[in-house]
Amino acid sequence: GEDVEQSLFLSVREGDSSVINCTYTDSSSTYLYWYKQEPGAGLQLLTYIFSNMDMKQDQRLTVLLNKKDKHLSLRIADTQTGDSAIYFCAESISSGSARQLTFGSGTQLTVLP
Amino acid sequence: DADVTQTPRNRITKTGKRIMLECSQTKGHDRMYWYRQDPGLGLRLIYYSFDVKDINKGEISDGYSVSRQAQAKFSLSLESAIPNQTALYFCATQTSGRSGELFFGEGSRLTVL
Image (cartoon, rainbow over all chains, first blue to last red; front, top):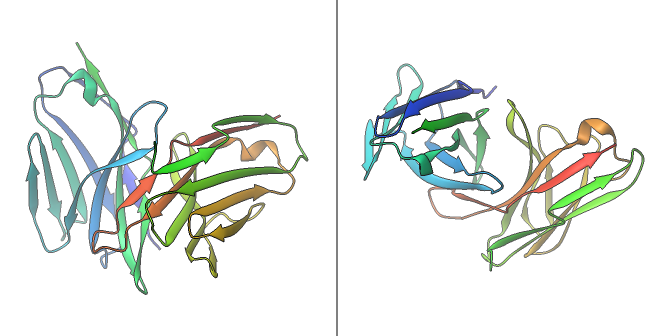
């Protein structure tokens, strides 16, 4: 079955880089996602990567995918206090014409001044 | 105005009561989902619907039911609430595009005493 695992907590100093890691089990995953949840809000898509890619960069965000090890990471450069949130990794499996997403437990990122 | 709106945002109820959580969307998406979030467990899928005539159980559907009244409306019911249904509930819609991005409401916090 599908399983997505993440560590629960990460603390970094403002200005440092943050790296949030995720492992998944289903080798047929086609898209992998990073969602961000700010306090009192729903999840919002940060970025996603197609499974035939190794890396994707979007401003301060870098996503690395190691398909052999089923490992996904999100690096946030120059982390700011506004980056404090819960970050969810998710994998998707095609289900007919739709994609079913399975989420990890979320990593609470705390940015210290 | 939010694209995905959930009501109520907060609800406290007693064991055995019937509760309905409502979700409406202006995204025009056919696919809608109900998730439950518990600390340390991430998001777990309760029910999903690919169109008004299509309802599917997720991984934790026991104790819940849903109704898809229209393309824009998807409600979740707890017929007889119990304390372990205390959680944060999210409705989401999904694009039919390749990415399968989910768009979340702001959540409904339910407490069952």
